[in-house]
Image (cartoon, rainbow, N blue to C red; front, top):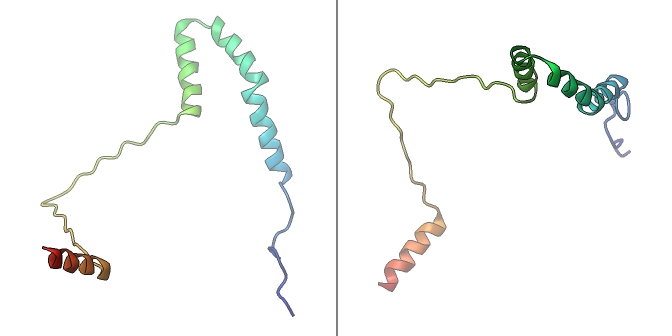
Length: 98
């Protein structure tokens, strides 16, 4: 008897309702609500505009976490050269041609 094809544990085929709702919300935010938000931003005083603009900017371009690499003591790097059979063969052929 052959094994059944596909994922036998999958509950639903296709997208869940919540996924569809989130996609619809994302579409609305980036289209018709974006036009409305731009009109509101245009009418804000400079200080409030800057505040709202930075909040929205962080949504599209999240801040990167600062990572500092601090090493205690000496740091050494060990580089190992690995030669393959082909490398050895090429070296021998080059030596033979000299």
